Length: 388
Ligand SMILES: *[C@@H]1O[C@H](CO)[C@@H](O)[C@H](O)[C@H]1NC(C)=O
Ligand SMILES: *[C@@H]1O[C@H](CO)[C@@H](O)[C@H](O)[C@H]1NC(C)=O
Ligand SMILES: *[C@@H]1O[C@H](CO)[C@@H](O)[C@H](O)[C@H]1NC(C)=O
Ligand SMILES: *[C@@H]1O[C@H](CO)[C@@H](O)[C@H](O)[C@H]1NC(C)=O
Image (cartoon, rainbow, N blue to C red):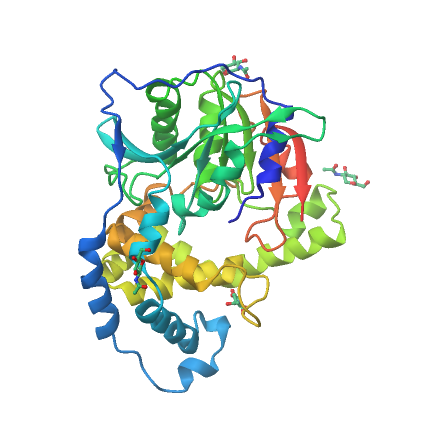
């Protein structure tokens, strides 16, 4: 879920720098500065959090994390939400960035656009997934816009665009039958027609990887580098790897085991959101503690190499901020329909994208999916693979 900005920097060695000069669009996209102000919904959120009763029976504690979020963890999150979490402060931090909205194909698209001072900065679109949001890229935006030196001694910086997926945060709810390929088209329009970047690089994670990959495949003259930490293809099973004579190093064996564990016991939400999105979406729509249990469990389980045994690498405050954004923007129900709308979003048959531009891939030890280099190379022009 998290990106190492140093990995993204590696893009610069490979990318043919565009001289695209972003100017305000006069092409009818209604480009407008945007300021976050959700304060008026906060009292309702706090009231709902306070009024939610949780059970006291020890069975909800003794089942441990294999049954999902533990009651004690949920309670401690809830206490922090009511006592130390401060939406006003979070919102103020978010508003330090330049936010905009534009209307593309009838959908309002929210995005952050932060430019480097360098004239030859590389335009870079960062695409989040579920249960993420633009917030997961906020910690790296400034670093990416600042000039750095690559391993080959080249100066590099990025013009960073972080867009909210349709159905997430401040972007419009997508129409029926909307797919990842449609979002890819809208985001390419954002980069090329609204922001006037002739060519650009993109990074995607989770569903964002599916969108970024579709952009790379559909728009091979504008997407000139792609960086991913996830693929829109189902990871290979151990048997499939063996059948193709792909052998794994010890770290890769571990990553394969994490991914198989996810397939065996962590995929319930995925099936629910793919087959009955409205049931879970509407059930939790106005229920912040419910959203915290459903989303918070994913943040803890997927991002926490400490496996709950010591404090998470994500702070509780970061998790509460993410869940609050879902609740306050009323986007939980519209966020889960991406699963329903893309039942084949993770393909089982591997194909190669129609693009000769560089593909970079970062594997992370606790990612819920694992794709060794030989498998990633099936999908595009893989020139860089890192593992940690
Ligand atoms: C919440 O944050 C705002 C903005 O930083 C600050 O003015 C306010 O005092 C904080 N509230 C509390 C209760 O700490
Ligand atoms: C895997 O290795 C075996 C034995 O060397 C060979 O017969 C087989 O063709 C290889 N399979 C692939 C997919 O390369
Ligand atoms: C994550 O979920 C798996 C089952 O999918 C479980 O075995 C593990 O204990 C959970 N870890 C945490 C930290 O919640
Ligand atoms: C882009 O796709 C077209 C159509 O499939 C293909 O002919 C062309 O070679 C591709 N260009 C690049 C740069 O990959």
